[in-house]
Length: 306
Ligand code: PSU
Ligand code: MN
Image 1 (spheres, protein in one colour):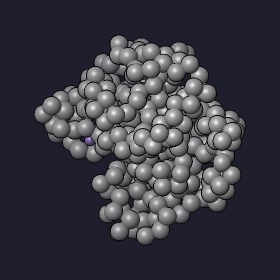
Image 2 (cartoon, rainbow, N blue to C red):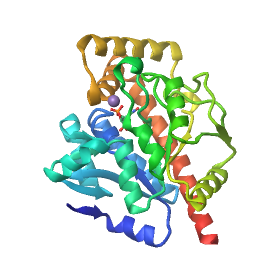
Image 3 (cartoon, rainbow, N blue to C red):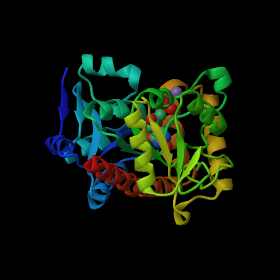
Image 4 (cartoon, helix red, strand yellow):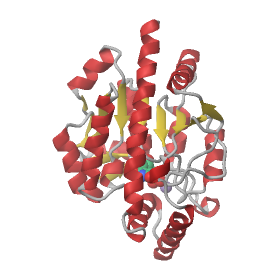
């Protein structure tokens, strides 16, 4: 069993510089090639421009890789859905059988925590699926947020999920849900969901103080920060919700279940919207990279003062 950490990341952590974790399921299962690779590399670039060090996670031949290089990210994008999607329960098999694996939000948190990385930026988290009352399909991301001390910044959760139930489970798991400069929980492609977050963050510095307070008190578990998609890229709720309903109905008719659900729905929605949802998805990830890195910088500045 090997954990490989990129020297640049190791050095940055030792020096207390802001490191930002990134997942790889969004590359292999969340977007089509080649835009997945282009997006992943642009996100790394944005993080650097904001003064952070990017750290994209993955499993390569069974090694846990904390900080993939460009060629590895390219390979993840090319291999796409043929790479295993690795959530917490899949880690031992992937490592023990020396396979490639893409990290979900849950697994990215696990690797980040191992390395001592406190901030993680992505597009959307998994949550409680519609009809979970019967299927029990609740993403392992939610439990991970309840136990692993990493802050995850995302654009909310997609309406492919049951958002009110997702908030209920986050509450049960003890996860603070903080809206960046808004009281409204964003729904990924759209700016509104009709639901409220627990607290509206004033700015990046306040986010950093809250993360630090939790750490100083020794309270284990994650924090979820939601960041709203910029107005100019947000989608018409009627259009996207119709596409989502259609995708969910087709998934149920085909009997798709388990870990295949989320990748199936993501691809189907891109199909139905003729790529419009992909453009929105990419833009919201860029926006998250900006805000998330600024929070990581504030957090690093707070550490320096101690
Ligand atoms: N939501 C998105 N894009 C994604 C995912 C979710 O908008 O790429 C991925 C993330 O890696 C997330 C995972 O952790 O799907 C959740 O899968 P599941 O629902 O099977 O737990
Ligand atoms: Mn699931």
